[in-house]
Figure 1 (cartoon, rainbow, N blue to C red):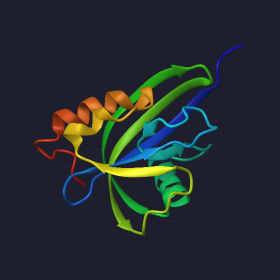
Figure 2 (cartoon, rainbow, N blue to C red):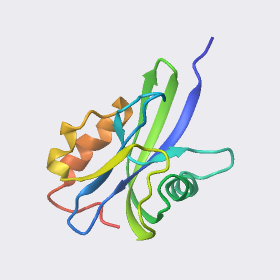
Figure 3 (cartoon, rainbow, N blue to C red):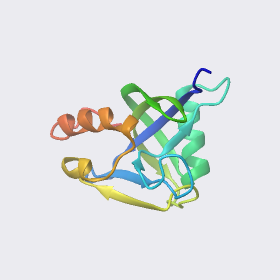
Length: 139
């Protein structure tokens, strides 16, 4: 039987100090306790940008602006194949409320790889680290 193909988006949200918002997945779900960029599944008929704005509002009560695309990666897990597209983003309004994650951290991009990341997020992390000195991804 073919594995389920899951299209998801993630937001690389930077604060005024260029630290990045990282979120930890809860126990009892796929990739339990792994760190990820906040976001979620793209629903039928949605663009990636629409999905990202919706997911950040649903999961963290944040209104965001979406900037430059970082990368699209594909990773095969035991539960399915995930296609993850990441974008730089900024918070426009809202206070972070963790409705889907157990914790969040603002992390220096040069130290971001110290967290235990979901594998699909790792290619974006490598790009972020390379760009961290020159702010090319600013929204």
